[in-house]
Image (cartoon, rainbow, N blue to C red; front, side, top):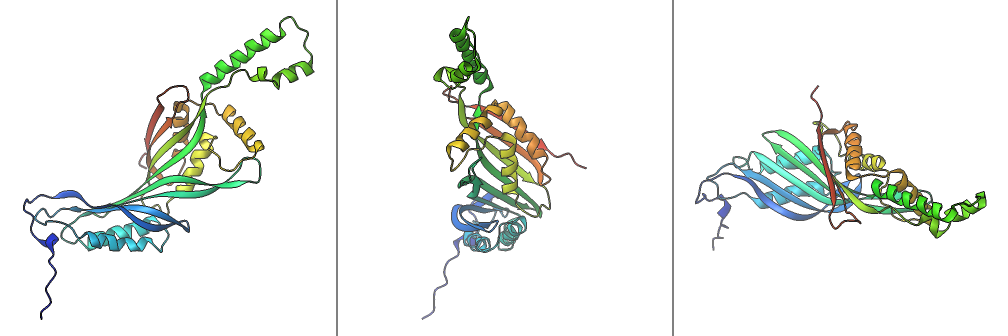
Amino acid sequence: MNALTLPDIAAQASRQALPLDWVGMCGIALPILIDGQRLSAKADAGVSLDDGEARGIHMSRLYLALEMLESQDLQPALLRQVLQRFLDSHEGLSNSAYLRVHTDLLLKRPALVSPLAGWKSYPVSIEARLEKQMFHVELKIDVSYSSTCPCSAALARQLIQQQFIDDFANTSLQHEDVLAWLGSAKGIIATPHSQRSTAHLRVDLQPGQPSLPLTELIDQAEAALGTAVQTAVKRADEQAFALANGQNLMFCEDAARRLNLALQRSDAVQAFHLKVIHAESLHAHDAVAESRWTRARA
Protein backbone atom coordinates (compact mmCIF):
# COMPACT_ATOMS: atom_id res chain seq x y z
CA MET A 1 0.00 0.00 0.00
CA ASN A 2 1.36 3.40 -0.96
CA ALA A 3 2.00 5.82 1.89
CA LEU A 4 -0.01 9.00 1.69
CA THR A 5 1.95 12.26 1.38
CA LEU A 6 1.29 14.54 4.29
CA PRO A 7 -0.37 17.77 3.12
CA ASP A 8 1.60 21.03 3.32
CA ILE A 9 -1.15 23.61 3.70
CA ALA A 10 1.31 26.46 4.37
CA ALA A 11 2.78 25.97 0.89
CA GLN A 12 -0.56 26.57 -0.78
CA ALA A 13 -1.40 29.90 -2.36
CA SER A 14 -3.02 32.55 -0.21
CA ARG A 15 -6.67 33.32 -0.81
CA GLN A 16 -5.85 37.01 -0.38
CA ALA A 17 -2.45 38.03 -1.75
CA LEU A 18 -0.93 40.35 0.85
CA PRO A 19 2.56 40.52 2.46
CA LEU A 20 2.77 40.48 6.27
CA ASP A 21 5.31 42.29 8.49
CA TRP A 22 5.75 39.59 11.14
CA VAL A 23 4.65 35.98 11.41
CA GLY A 24 5.89 33.55 14.01
CA MET A 25 5.51 32.32 17.59
CA CYS A 26 5.57 33.98 21.01
CA GLY A 27 6.34 32.55 24.43
CA ILE A 28 8.51 29.59 23.36
CA ALA A 29 10.08 28.01 26.47
CA LEU A 30 13.78 27.22 26.21
CA PRO A 31 17.01 27.23 28.26
CA ILE A 32 19.72 29.76 27.39
CA LEU A 33 23.25 30.54 28.55
CA ILE A 34 24.29 34.07 29.54
CA ASP A 35 27.84 34.48 30.84
CA GLY A 36 27.91 30.75 31.52
CA GLN A 37 24.71 30.87 33.59
CA ARG A 38 21.89 28.57 32.43
CA LEU A 39 18.57 30.38 32.62
CA SER A 40 14.96 29.61 31.85
CA ALA A 41 13.72 31.88 29.06
CA LYS A 42 10.83 32.59 26.72
CA ALA A 43 11.46 33.42 23.07
CA ASP A 44 9.44 35.17 20.39
CA ALA A 45 10.58 34.10 16.91
CA GLY A 46 9.31 35.37 13.59
CA VAL A 47 9.99 36.40 10.03
CA SER A 48 8.35 38.72 7.55
CA LEU A 49 6.12 37.13 4.92
CA ASP A 50 7.14 39.18 1.88
CA ASP A 51 5.68 36.79 -0.66
CA GLY A 52 2.06 37.84 -0.49
CA GLU A 53 1.03 34.88 -2.62
CA ALA A 54 2.24 32.37 0.01
CA ARG A 55 -0.34 31.28 2.54
CA GLY A 56 2.05 31.02 5.47
CA ILE A 57 5.51 30.33 6.85
CA HIS A 58 7.04 27.13 8.25
CA MET A 59 6.93 27.77 11.99
CA SER A 60 8.54 24.47 12.91
CA ARG A 61 11.69 25.59 11.10
CA LEU A 62 11.94 28.61 13.40
CA TYR A 63 11.40 26.40 16.43
CA LEU A 64 14.15 23.98 15.43
CA ALA A 65 16.61 26.82 14.75
CA LEU A 66 16.26 27.94 18.37
CA GLU A 67 18.09 24.79 19.48
CA MET A 68 21.31 26.71 18.71
CA LEU A 69 20.67 28.82 21.82
CA GLU A 70 20.68 25.87 24.22
CA SER A 71 24.39 25.05 24.28
CA GLN A 72 26.22 28.27 23.36
CA ASP A 73 26.69 31.47 25.32
CA LEU A 74 24.28 34.11 24.09
CA GLN A 75 26.26 36.66 22.07
CA PRO A 76 25.42 38.93 19.12
CA ALA A 77 27.19 36.58 16.68
CA LEU A 78 25.03 33.65 17.81
CA LEU A 79 21.87 35.73 17.53
CA ARG A 80 22.80 36.63 13.97
CA GLN A 81 23.39 32.96 13.11
CA VAL A 82 19.93 32.04 14.38
CA LEU A 83 18.30 34.84 12.42
CA GLN A 84 20.18 33.83 9.27
CA ARG A 85 18.91 30.28 9.72
CA PHE A 86 15.37 31.67 9.97
CA LEU A 87 15.86 33.34 6.59
CA ASP A 88 17.67 30.43 4.94
CA SER A 89 14.78 28.15 5.87
CA HIS A 90 12.32 30.64 4.33
CA GLU A 91 14.18 31.51 1.16
CA GLY A 92 11.87 33.19 -1.31
CA LEU A 93 9.32 33.96 1.42
CA SER A 94 11.04 36.29 3.89
CA ASN A 95 13.52 39.15 3.86
CA SER A 96 13.55 39.96 7.59
CA ALA A 97 13.92 37.87 10.73
CA TYR A 98 13.24 38.71 14.37
CA LEU A 99 14.07 37.17 17.74
CA ARG A 100 13.22 38.31 21.27
CA VAL A 101 14.49 36.44 24.32
CA HIS A 102 13.02 37.22 27.74
CA THR A 103 14.58 35.99 30.99
CA ASP A 104 15.60 36.99 34.52
CA LEU A 105 19.33 37.48 34.92
CA LEU A 106 20.53 36.36 38.36
CA LEU A 107 23.43 38.27 39.91
CA LYS A 108 24.89 37.61 43.34
CA ARG A 109 25.18 40.93 45.16
CA PRO A 110 27.22 41.60 48.32
CA ALA A 111 25.72 43.41 51.30
CA LEU A 112 26.84 46.98 51.88
CA VAL A 113 28.86 46.29 55.05
CA SER A 114 28.56 42.73 56.34
CA PRO A 115 29.99 39.65 54.57
CA LEU A 116 26.50 38.52 53.51
CA ALA A 117 25.47 38.18 49.87
CA GLY A 118 22.32 37.19 48.04
CA TRP A 119 20.88 36.62 44.59
CA LYS A 120 19.08 39.40 42.81
CA SER A 121 16.84 39.00 39.78
CA TYR A 122 16.92 41.45 36.86
CA PRO A 123 14.26 41.11 34.13
CA VAL A 124 16.02 41.41 30.76
CA SER A 125 15.03 41.09 27.11
CA ILE A 126 17.37 40.68 24.16
CA GLU A 127 15.84 41.69 20.85
CA ALA A 128 17.63 41.02 17.56
CA ARG A 129 16.57 41.55 13.98
CA LEU A 130 18.10 40.97 10.58
CA GLU A 131 16.54 43.10 7.86
CA LYS A 132 18.04 43.03 4.37
CA GLN A 133 21.35 41.92 5.95
CA MET A 134 21.30 44.83 8.43
CA PHE A 135 21.77 43.37 11.93
CA HIS A 136 20.57 45.16 15.07
CA VAL A 137 20.51 44.22 18.77
CA GLU A 138 18.53 45.96 21.51
CA LEU A 139 18.63 45.22 25.25
CA LYS A 140 15.87 45.91 27.74
CA ILE A 141 16.78 45.85 31.43
CA ASP A 142 14.81 46.63 34.60
CA VAL A 143 16.76 47.88 37.62
CA SER A 144 15.13 48.39 41.04
CA TYR A 145 16.32 51.01 43.50
CA SER A 146 15.15 53.13 46.43
CA SER A 147 14.38 56.83 46.07
CA THR A 148 13.95 59.31 48.92
CA CYS A 149 12.11 62.56 48.18
CA PRO A 150 14.28 65.72 48.62
CA CYS A 151 11.24 67.85 49.40
CA SER A 152 10.01 65.44 52.06
CA ALA A 153 13.52 65.31 53.57
CA ALA A 154 13.64 69.11 53.86
CA LEU A 155 10.19 69.21 55.50
CA ALA A 156 11.23 66.49 57.96
CA ARG A 157 14.40 68.41 58.88
CA GLN A 158 12.31 71.53 59.53
CA LEU A 159 10.01 69.65 61.92
CA ILE A 160 13.03 68.26 63.77
CA GLN A 161 14.44 71.77 64.07
CA GLN A 162 11.13 73.02 65.46
CA GLN A 163 11.00 70.19 67.97
CA PHE A 164 14.54 71.04 69.06
CA ILE A 165 13.51 74.66 69.61
CA ASP A 166 10.43 73.61 71.61
CA ASP A 167 12.42 71.24 73.82
CA PHE A 168 15.44 73.45 74.47
CA ALA A 169 14.11 77.01 74.41
CA ASN A 170 15.85 79.13 77.04
CA THR A 171 17.89 76.11 78.15
CA SER A 172 21.60 75.95 78.75
CA LEU A 173 22.68 73.05 76.55
CA GLN A 174 25.22 70.42 77.38
CA HIS A 175 26.78 68.07 74.85
CA GLU A 176 25.31 65.05 76.63
CA ASP A 177 21.81 66.55 76.55
CA VAL A 178 21.91 67.13 72.80
CA LEU A 179 23.34 63.66 72.16
CA ALA A 180 20.61 62.04 74.26
CA TRP A 181 17.93 64.08 72.46
CA LEU A 182 19.23 63.06 69.05
CA GLY A 183 19.04 59.42 70.09
CA SER A 184 15.47 59.70 71.35
CA ALA A 185 12.18 59.51 69.45
CA LYS A 186 12.00 63.29 69.48
CA GLY A 187 15.27 63.51 67.58
CA ILE A 188 13.59 61.91 64.60
CA ILE A 189 10.04 63.18 65.01
CA ALA A 190 9.55 63.12 61.23
CA THR A 191 11.02 61.01 58.44
CA PRO A 192 11.10 61.66 54.69
CA HIS A 193 9.12 59.33 52.46
CA SER A 194 10.90 56.95 50.13
CA GLN A 195 9.73 54.28 47.72
CA ARG A 196 10.90 51.33 45.68
CA SER A 197 11.56 52.61 42.18
CA THR A 198 12.32 51.05 38.82
CA ALA A 199 14.47 52.11 35.89
CA HIS A 200 13.44 50.64 32.55
CA LEU A 201 16.43 50.78 30.20
CA ARG A 202 16.19 50.18 26.45
CA VAL A 203 19.64 50.17 24.87
CA ASP A 204 20.68 49.88 21.21
CA LEU A 205 24.10 48.27 20.94
CA GLN A 206 26.87 49.60 18.76
CA PRO A 207 27.25 47.81 15.41
CA GLY A 208 29.90 45.11 15.78
CA GLN A 209 29.55 44.93 19.57
CA PRO A 210 30.93 41.44 20.35
CA SER A 211 29.11 40.75 23.62
CA LEU A 212 25.89 41.50 25.50
CA PRO A 213 26.96 43.93 28.27
CA LEU A 214 24.01 43.17 30.55
CA THR A 215 25.96 43.01 33.82
CA GLU A 216 28.07 46.02 32.84
CA LEU A 217 24.99 48.17 32.18
CA ILE A 218 23.31 47.04 35.40
CA ASP A 219 26.45 47.88 37.40
CA GLN A 220 26.67 51.32 35.77
CA ALA A 221 23.02 52.06 36.50
CA GLU A 222 23.21 50.97 40.14
CA ALA A 223 26.43 52.93 40.72
CA ALA A 224 24.84 56.06 39.24
CA LEU A 225 21.75 55.77 41.43
CA GLY A 226 23.57 54.79 44.62
CA THR A 227 20.57 53.10 46.26
CA ALA A 228 20.13 49.69 44.62
CA VAL A 229 17.73 47.46 46.56
CA GLN A 230 19.47 44.88 48.73
CA THR A 231 19.27 41.13 49.30
CA ALA A 232 20.55 39.60 52.57
CA VAL A 233 21.29 42.26 55.21
CA LYS A 234 22.29 42.68 58.83
CA ARG A 235 21.49 45.78 60.89
CA ALA A 236 24.79 47.36 59.86
CA ASP A 237 23.78 46.95 56.20
CA GLU A 238 20.34 48.43 56.85
CA GLN A 239 22.00 51.41 58.52
CA ALA A 240 24.34 51.82 55.56
CA PHE A 241 21.33 51.67 53.23
CA ALA A 242 19.62 54.43 55.23
CA LEU A 243 22.80 56.50 54.90
CA ALA A 244 22.92 55.88 51.13
CA ASN A 245 19.32 57.06 50.79
CA GLY A 246 20.04 60.16 52.85
CA GLN A 247 23.05 61.00 50.69
CA ASN A 248 21.21 60.32 47.42
CA LEU A 249 17.97 62.24 47.73
CA MET A 250 16.35 62.30 44.30
CA PHE A 251 13.26 63.19 42.38
CA CYS A 252 12.48 61.06 39.33
CA GLU A 253 14.07 63.83 37.24
CA ASP A 254 17.34 63.45 39.16
CA ALA A 255 17.36 59.68 38.65
CA ALA A 256 16.73 60.02 34.91
CA ARG A 257 19.59 62.49 34.53
CA ARG A 258 22.01 60.31 36.49
CA LEU A 259 21.21 57.30 34.34
CA ASN A 260 21.43 59.31 31.12
CA LEU A 261 24.96 60.45 31.90
CA ALA A 262 26.05 56.99 33.04
CA LEU A 263 24.80 55.22 29.90
CA GLN A 264 26.42 57.78 27.62
CA ARG A 265 29.80 56.72 29.00
CA SER A 266 29.39 53.12 27.82
CA ASP A 267 31.30 52.38 24.62
CA ALA A 268 28.86 49.53 23.87
CA VAL A 269 25.87 51.86 23.57
CA GLN A 270 24.73 53.41 20.28
CA ALA A 271 21.47 54.87 21.60
CA PHE A 272 19.07 54.45 24.51
CA HIS A 273 15.68 55.32 25.90
CA LEU A 274 15.14 55.19 29.64
CA LYS A 275 12.10 55.53 31.86
CA VAL A 276 12.16 55.79 35.65
CA ILE A 277 9.10 55.15 37.79
CA HIS A 278 8.94 56.19 41.44
CA ALA A 279 6.01 54.29 42.99
CA GLU A 280 5.04 57.12 45.32
CA SER A 281 4.40 56.34 48.98
CA LEU A 282 2.83 59.79 49.48
CA HIS A 283 0.53 59.82 46.44
CA ALA A 284 -1.71 57.18 44.91
CA HIS A 285 -0.02 57.82 41.55
CA ASP A 286 3.56 57.37 40.31
CA ALA A 287 6.19 59.94 39.43
CA VAL A 288 7.75 59.25 36.02
CA ALA A 289 10.58 60.69 33.91
CA GLU A 290 11.93 59.64 30.51
CA SER A 291 15.07 60.44 28.56
CA ARG A 292 16.71 59.34 25.31
CA TRP A 293 20.09 59.76 23.63
CA THR A 294 21.77 58.81 20.36
CA ARG A 295 25.52 58.79 19.81
CA ALA A 296 26.62 61.39 17.29
CA ARG A 297 28.17 59.97 14.13
CA ALA A 298 31.93 60.37 13.85
